[in-house]
Image (cartoon, rainbow, N blue to C red; front, side, top):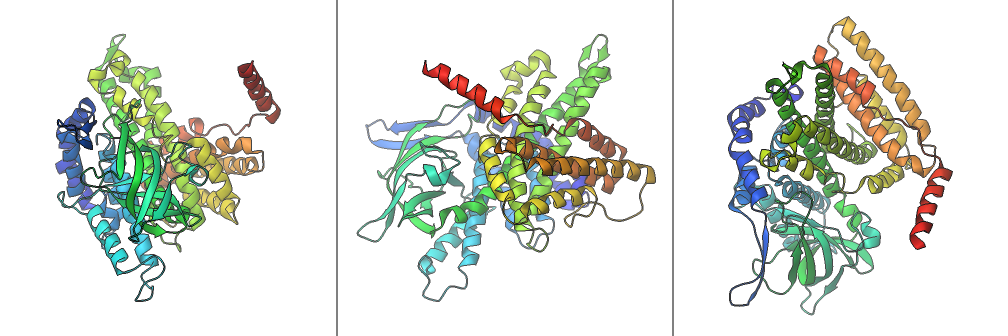
Length: 544
């Protein structure tokens, strides 16, 4: 990881002084307590008065304070810092797997700060008396929110929610949103409806969508400090994983809201890009964490008279796990650079497609690889008191959060059909592999000719795969999932090759070699007739 930013003094110092101690000590123990003491809902107090209060453990709040002091959100919003995207990315990689799921509210907080900052900039040239949406009070509300969302002072730090999912679904917000906004007699906008799945309900504010004046609009909601009848916490959700995280179903009974954008889908895009970036970093963090534990375990555990590390079969497994971990770390780092890049550095099309593709790929690879890594511990990997199963349980949410694989694949296919998006994303991956990427990669200095020859061969192999992938884009919609995972794995390959070009380390070249042999999925699609026959037959059997 630190090869990405090996000259950054701040990252090195933070890692040496804080993270080593926290991962093995304080932070990990806090996270374990969050798992042991999950949030609970107090509907009534002892006198029968309605409270709807979500109670979280002290450790959950302490991890929030650590995140605030370390500036895990604020780093990216500090315009004076160089390499701020990588600085934040590396801190989050180290923090995510042992954060007790605080990574989730941080994602929505960073996304909300990004969205509100974008809207403020969009309206900075409005007339002095404001426009249809903004006014001095409106701007002050947003500025205050951004200041608190990015604060390094735990007493001032706010977290944000993202209320999108309703009973009809979560990813297709245009078709599933039923919440409505109405203006009362006093001119206050109030929201009415059900939000079926809302994470980190202990937040201070939330961004949400509702129908208003015939449009799906974006709103800012301040959660009431005490129960006032406008926000009902119906229940807390019981989940496979992420048990540390207070996730609730809400009923909105006229909660006050601030209109942010009349075109809600366009307004929420900056938040979605940031939360997908966090999802990708979380995937890399979980995988990196369990692979590190697997490597350590293999050095001390013996079988057949030898340490596991010396057994050829297990050594091969560890090499594949380590390669996948490196790939996801590099993918998340590249995505952090891309979505924060200026338009002249990388096009909007590349940022939009890459955020979707990397989210899909990192989530899928993380879950399958973490399951395999868990197996490396034998029975210990299945025992709750080793704190290893929680890594798999929590990671299982990653392919679901911020859009399931098939829903995001449909979004990707639509994005690739617009203008020159297909050509631009494929060229970006090729440039990354060949060391021509504007955001990083090969620096042009003389290198080992033998290694360069190997890397050139890998780049040419990747070019062939990308050409096959481009042909797959012409196939039926049933190929979309293969294309998404193929494009994601190709981006991972390009990231590994790019790093190897830069470092000239033999281990980096070997990792790129292993990924090219094991990480690129087949692009062979399923026959449409077979798909229809199987699904129709199954459907008919259910109706009998």
